[in-house]
Image (cartoon, rainbow, N blue to C red):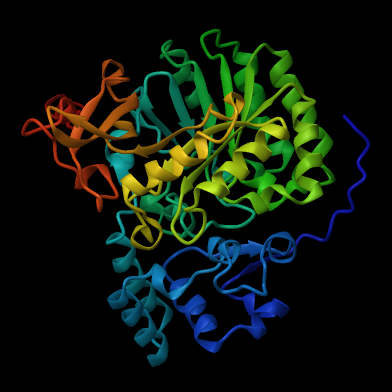
Amino acid sequence: MTQVLTQQPQYKTYSLHNFKNIPQIQKLPEEVIEAIEVVAQVLPFKTNNYVVNELIDWDKAPDDPLFILNFPVREMLLPEHYKQVKEALDKGVDRATLREIVNKIRLQLNPHPAGQLQYNVPSIDGIKLRGVQHKYNETVLFFPSQGQTCHAYCSFCFRWPQFVGMDDLKFAMREVDLLIKYLQAHPEVTDLLFTGGDPMIMRTKVLKTYIEPILEANIEHLQTIRIGTKALAYWPYRFISDPDADDLLRLFERIVQSGKHLAIMAHFNHPRELEPEPVAEATRRILNTGAVIRTQSPVLNHINADSKLWETMWKKQVNMGMIPYYMFVARDTGAHHFFAIPLVKAWEIYRNAWKNVSGLGRTARGPSMSATPGKVEVLGPAQVNGKKVLALRMIQGRNPDWVDKPFFAEYDEKATWLDELKPAFSDKFFFEDELEKYVRK
């Protein structure tokens, strides 16, 4: 581990209750401040002083993409929902009444897309593992209870139900022994993904209580441990100068030395998140442990729907030693109407960026929809028997046999999600009948 040279600022978070203490906020129009207060009643809002001072271009706010990535804006709620919340606030309704109004709206926002809650939660010995998802054979997702918050909340986040206090919608568990028992019973599982929230919000001593028992269990078929995190972008000091940063890196080293592959699944949504020196320093320190860093982001209206931006981001990531991994499509949940772009446009952005990077940058797959049947990649327009169609394939599927089989949808310039597409040459897509069996289990 290298000598730490970066001076860490004092960590401070901002939420609905204290965001007006941010000096730059006072310069924004009153209607922008009102929108933050209204929309944040429904969608989670939290940011921190690193994001505020290092990432957001306040001269361009509220149109700055990093401002929109962190701060709620009016259009993130449908007009009728905004009106309901605004009227309730104006009337000064009590907290219980406001919560009832807000929760009714939340339930209309498809809080668990792609059947996560209904179809992905497994059991062991008759116990439902409410902090585990197992959708694809090889990969299990684990939601450690203490990791179900973040250094700052992305406004597009499809995991927003984790943060709004509706326990029936939340994935989380502490019982690592049940997780280990489940992994031991499923030899098809090679990869375990710690997710959230953000596992890097946890202190190292807490993270160890999950990681060390897994390593000690010596599960031979478990080859890879992944950790999904936005900390490199939102609080890189987690890996540099936090009080337990060195302990965290030693834990990473232990994972690698145990024979497991360690992949840090880093979320970067805009090239500006890669620019501060602490990000480069944190990246170097992580890579020195033997871990790899893979990067991913959805393509988002108002934030990064531009091919030059993605080209710049992928080139910079490769230069820093990271591996571009996925361009996702914004999931059909929360403020999807605000962030979504048509699938055809997403493909154009992907292709125009992908063709201008070297082979080392062409590891990024996409644009990919994490839909109910699997990860569906948009391959682009095609001509089949004189008919213009949209070609697709699955990168992952509930049934592994679906993977990499091309299939075709009617060409549709407006569709933003799989369920808006129609099969091109039949009444159903090839997987639909079998999918019914999976979702009825």
